[in-house]
Picture 1 (cartoon, rainbow, N blue to C red):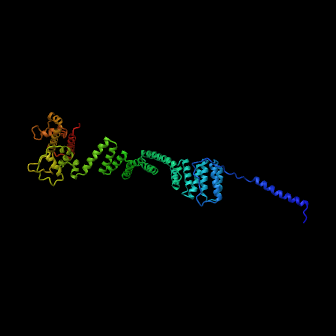
Picture 2: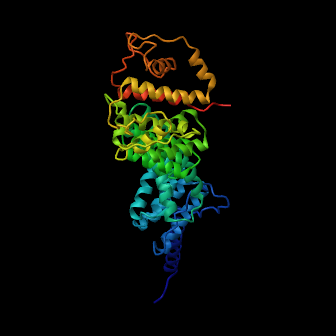
Picture 3: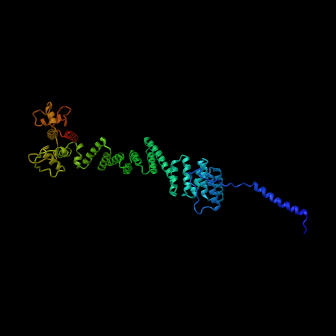
Length: 463
């Protein structure tokens, strides 16, 4: 076939046209610009959303890495385009969702960032980069307690993320302070349930802070939940054995439950750390209560009894005035035939030997006999004589006093010296009409009052 010049020209121009079109199309196509090399990350606190093994194709992984480079160069928009392209190519590639979350954080859109991080966490609940980013977004949104939880979850999922440790520590303190302030305010307003919940949340954030348990215990006590209050007060004391307030609170809970010996032990530990006159008096009172609780029921009944028996009076003197009786250098030998079966036998023997209460001529004590005011006055006057032996000046003061007059007890009466002395010493008093009423039975209350005054007078002299 013969090729003409015209055919050759058409063929030449046809090839040139194809090349021209290709060149034009190449010029119009978008140019792929590689991300800049990052030497100093723009967002060093962001946790790179590295893809776990087996996730994503090489092309998707390359696009994802490119997106992160754009973000760390400071170009959040380019980063978003690349993350979106990676996610479009592989909709299940959740690291790109986390990348979009960080890009949104860079644009200061915490709401959008949280949505992206949440989607990544739904896909993989232990994906540390998304959990860390989620914490950042929540922190920007003012949800410090939720942010702390997310940071803690990220750290648990990937312990190598040491950069989270300082944030967790700072946030833990911040959350705790906010919870404590709110809980204290609720307690002051009487919102005890709300206060308890607040302290419990603070404890969850800082479980080794003893003062939190102590303050929670105080609220629980106010809420009448003594069991919980005791448990948390003891926890506070165990965490900080040098805190007297926790020990006092523990003692109060034990005292309220009737565990007097344990309460005394806790109070005493607090006193050893920080001396306190009020607490010392409280411990002494508790010791008296504990001693009373250990006594027979007949002894415990004395304060409210309408009348008292000789064995009850002997026990009261023997217990309350034991220090005075123990200081006596002399003891009287006695024979008592009817005290052996009495619940107060040891004290009957003690007061009889001290000469404070008499044994009758037939060697009987008559433990169940009713004590009359004359009997109480005689026993009290004998105790006063023992006190005067130790404190002569006090005895001289009583003797120099102007003799008292009583309508029913004249100076010649056998009971007058005892009656006059106990009244002068303030141990007993006359009735409203001035009479002493020798034969009236002494009540438990006035008997306890008389022995208490004797106990006061018998206190050793201070130097």
